[in-house]
Image (cartoon, rainbow, N blue to C red; front, side, top):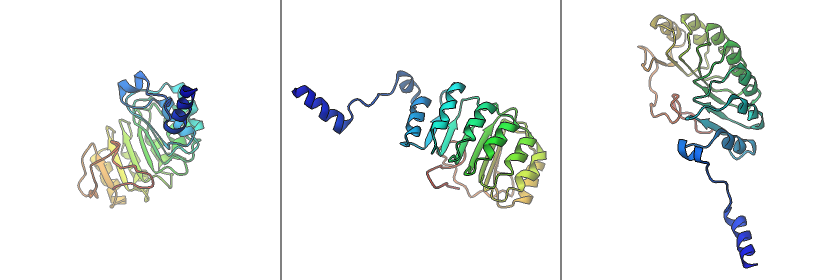
Length: 225
């Protein structure tokens, strides 16, 4: 009886049987996607950050359970257009970070329609200038980072026309100095990184102490520029 009483107190007061991290979580030093999804689904977290492992694409179907998700970062996961349709249903998303995706223009366009999206970081060998044209239609995106994607100077006019845009990063694209000059001419106050450099004339009073390796500090309801 004494043991049962102690057990009851332990459960009620200290949560003795909270599930410990799995061996995989301990090995990679981050919570698994499944663990983070469960937290997001019950509202105890508004972020899912999986940076060191690739999430099986079938598991991403569960994202629809995270109705109030604010930030999604899947650094190693080759997200496709099928998963983009799922992500596009989470209207609370403000930050989408998919640097290793296989998204096409259509998939990126779906995500760019998110009504609260402020930061979009996309890497995909399938993203072209046509996709950037769709991204540029977003009235909410303030930070845009495109990497390892074959976009060209044909995207310059669309990007330069995003007057709400505060920061644009292009790393590993087919944009040239001429294209960047066109963007700056259309949007002189835009903060630009071009292959890890600030082009001449770019607005560059920007902190480089970045918490998520994407150019910005994404604390809730705030960004550092």
